Amino acid sequence: MFKTNQWVFLEKDNQIALHKWQKIVNLMSDLFSAPAGFIVQAIEMGYRVVIASEQKDNPYKAGVVISADTNIFCKKVVQDNRALYVSHASKENYWLDNPEVTEGGFESYLGVPIHWPDGEVFGTLCVMDFAVTDYQRNYIELIKQLRDMVEDDLAMINSFVQMREIAMLDPLTNIYNRRALSLLAQQKLNLANRLGFHVCCLFIDINDFKWVNDNHGHEVGDSALIVLAQTLKNHLRDADIIGRLGGDEFVAVLQISSRDSVKHVTTKIIEGYKIALSEHNLPILSLSIGHSFSDKTKQSFEVLLEKADKDMYKNKQKFKLSK
Ligand SMILES: Nc1nc2c(ncn2[C@@H]2O[C@H](COP(=O)(O)OP(=O)(O)OP(=O)(O)O)[C@@H](O)[C@H]2O)c(=O)[nH]1
Image (tube, rainbow, N blue to C red):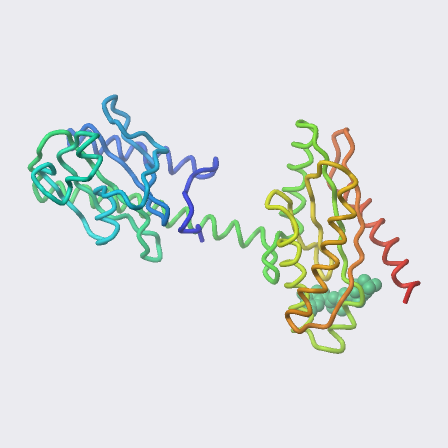
C-alpha cells in the first residue's frame, strides 16, 4: 500500500498516471473555460499541487506546497470530505484570509475530494477562476466523473505497489528477498562505479540458530530472525540495502566512506543484536559476519557476495573453535 502520509510521484514511478492526470486537468479547465485546474494531495504537513493545468496565467505550478494551517479551499474539501463550490469568494468572510483569493486573485472554486482505495482522502480535484462563476449542476457531475477516473488510477497504482512489495520482500522479516537484494545491490554497485564511492557487502549468519529452533521452537526462531532484520534496519542507514537470502543468512550492502569504518559497523550490529534479543526476552545469539569491498572495476554483485560469504565462513570457523 502507498504510504498515505507521503507525497506521491516524487520518484520516476508512475509517470504514465501523471501523464494521464495532466490530460484530465487540462481537459477539465478547458471544459470549464477556467484559467486553473489542479490535482492536490493532502498529507499532515500540508497540500501539494501534484498536477496543475498548463495555462500561462495559472499562478500555481506542480510541486508547490502550502502549509496545513493555511485557509485554502482544498483544506475545506479535505476536512469536510465533500464537494465545495464557492462562486464569489471575496464576498464571503470565511475566505478573507485565503491567499488564493487575497494574493492569487481567484474568485471561484469548485473542488471534489479524491479518495484512496480504502476510503481515506487523498486530496482534491479542483478548478479555479479569477472571475465570479455560475456553474450548473451538470458541471459538478462532470468534475465528479473526472475524479472517478483519477480514483481508478490510484487504485491501480496502489495494487501495483502492493504487488511489487510482495514480489520484493521476504514475508517473515519484511526486508528484501534474495531476488530484490541482487537487483538493488547490482544497481548500487554500478552507481558506485560511476560516481566513485565504495561499497561494502556484509554477509551475516546467526550462530547456532538450529539450536534455538530445536530447543525453543520455530516461533522463537522466527522472532530471532525478525529481531535481526530490525537490528540491521536500526543500525544501518536508509541508503543501505538489507536483505535475507534465506534461513538465518542476511546480507547488507553499504555505501562507505572508508574501509576502516566496517569494523565499527559490524561491532554495532553484533552488540545491538544481543541487546535487542534480551529486550524481547529471546535467547541470546551471536553472529558471524563476513565482508567484502567493491573495487574500482565494474563488478558483479554475485562475486562480492561470494567473497563476503567466504569471509563469514572463516569467522564462523573461528567462533566454533573458540567454543
Ligand atoms: N524459525 C525458522 N527457522 C528457519 C527458517 N528458515 C530456516 N530455518 C532453520 O534455520 C536453521 C539453520 O541451520 P544452520 O544453517 O545449521 O545454522 P546454525 O544452526 O546457525 O549453524 P551455524 O551457522 O553453523 O552456526 C535450520 O534449522 C532451518 O530449519 C525460518 O524461516 N524460520
